[in-house]
Length: 152
Image (tube, rainbow, N blue to C red):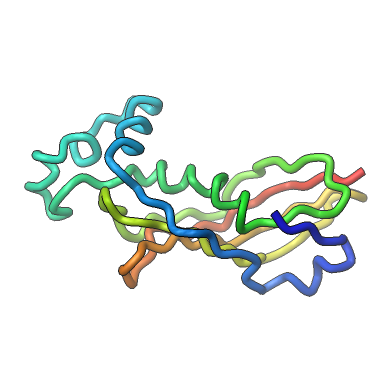
C-alpha cells in the first residue's frame, strides 16, 4: 500500500489512486459467502437451476462483490504517513449495475473523491470505487466509500 504525507493529499483529489489485479469469482467463493451470510438463493448456489434464468448460470451475491472492496483497498488504496489505524466509515452510495457470473474476473478502480480533516490528525476520505468485470462494458458496482485514518 502506498504511503503519502498530509501535504500531498490535496493534489490526489479527483485522481485515480489505484487499480487492482483481476480476481476470479469461482463457485467455491460464492458458496462460502452463502454459508457465512445464510443467503442460499438458487441463483448463487445451484448451477443447474441458475442455467434456466436470464443470467444463464450462477452469479455472485452483490454483497460478496461489495465485501471485496476491503481486499481491493489493500493494493489500490493508500495510507497517510504516521497513520495509527484506518477504519471503515460507510457508504454514501452503492449501486449494483451488472451481475458477476461465476467464472468471471473482477477488479477495483479507486478514485479519491474528497478528503475532510474532521479533527487534527483525523482524515475522512471518500473514494469512488468501480468494480469492473473482465470483458464487460458495464461495471458490477459503483460505490462512494468512506474511510477514516488517524495519525499520531
